[in-house]
Image (cartoon, rainbow, N blue to C red; front, side, top):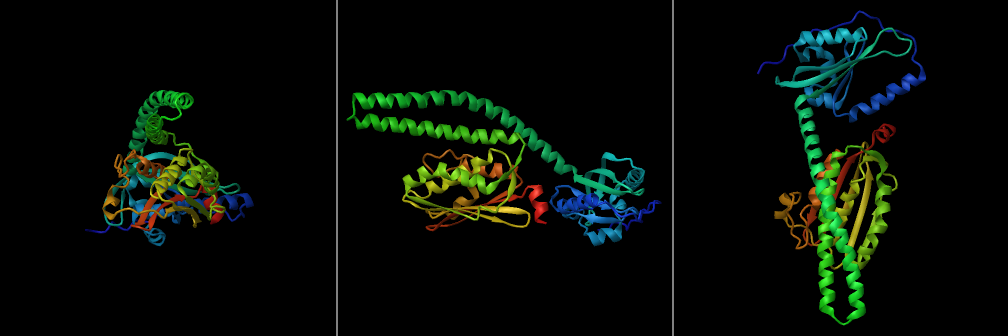
Length: 378
């Protein structure tokens, strides 16, 4: 395979200003530099002579070139038709941005990748010359993202409507079971068979309610609004809700490293991830044990571990863990871990699992820090 031709440098005629930048401009530049590594798009900042001065990790991944290589090679000739890209860059030097240009990018291995390119001028106060910000995204990535959003919207509409229709009769059933249980206790307190039947009815209604809640969690993924949330505080707030169930099973709860986790951009539905994983741990320890929720903050992300001391997961079950409607529990819905995986993925995170039969299981969630947290950490 032949290597792509070395591009000829494209230079501009404007000379850079030597006037010192105001402190607020310097601060803004530093903030942009801190955020660039965390962007999902390829981003290049070009100097006045159109040489590459900044090159984020995603740009390196899409093109196959490091900053040093692209500085030597030049950016313009990576794109085809090259004449179109050169024309776009010249327009930007005159202060004219380009919102969307559909081009092909030649990867370092010679393959052509369809991309969408946006170019914007960056002229600071007191300067006559301008830098150029080039943002490029793989067209296939954008199409997949669009299809996923359309799928989630359709799923959300369907699941929301269905869940609403199911929850109303479920709530009525809960209410009437409570009333019936009280009346039967007064009339016939020594009828254990009736009491067992009511417990069974309540159990099945609870199972249906859990199924509806899981469907609603998937439905709400179509609402992409997220807000910076203290992840450690969210876990600590949920702890009292878990305590009664844990005490009833003889399970001891340990919370570790949650105070300094920082903020993560979350939807409210993320609570369902924690509740499902805790329930999974409780079910694995019918004779009691220890549940540990441990947090750890890294450079640009946080990790949350939910560990139990239960029976563990057999090796042959690992490939099926996150498959919808697969369950080994007699009363399981088969959606719990699938919901966990889908919600975490919607938050640009990952979930992993490790287990040792007879000693327990650990689920590890990795999530990116909110942009403000990541920049303050840098």
